[in-house]
Image 1: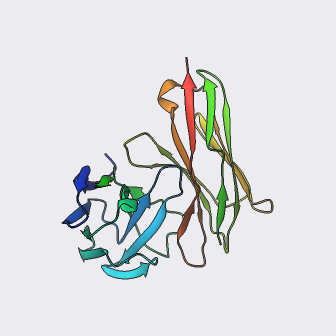
Image 2 (image 1 turned 30 degrees about the vertical axis):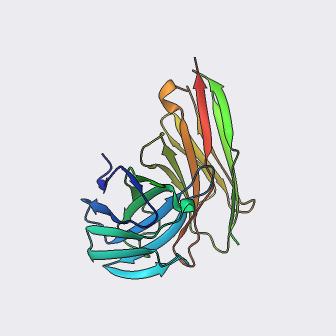
Image 3 (image 1 turned 135 degrees about the vertical axis):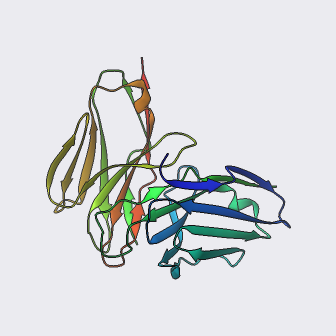
Length: 116
Length: 110
């Protein structure tokens, strides 16, 4: 139990579907992140939110749309994805974006996404 | 660009010692993290180094040399449960983001 919960754990969808990934953290953190993890590749940072405000969009295609309604919840809305988007999507949180640089990010177990 | 390099795979025997090296070239530096990730699970925090030297935590130790852009994670008295992927991540400091290596898969054999 890391304090960061992601649902669903697995998702299979067609390229024309719309779905959402959900992340919830119970750690009282103020920063939240979405990462993409593909086999044998480094984690790719997608989006960063600090106190509900988006501070980073790392050149992510518009078919991925994040939403952060409050500091505890983060969503990733998916629409018309491509087969190359199949990957593990990890959510993470940390205490503060800039001040506590020695504080680790806490990760959820991820959503394994497969695009047919 | 940001380069974080670590070996892809390592195999060791139960009870042995394994050293996972990580070299980095990044635009800035404000500390290096090691994470452990078991298959199908979340990466979990192992260690943080920002000053040169060795940090010891039980069976796991982490070393940093900032002048060489080099770190290693040392796993002693290996146990089967240590079979996992180990991720090296650098806090670039200038923009607070973490840059990750691709991970080293360690397999512990009986």
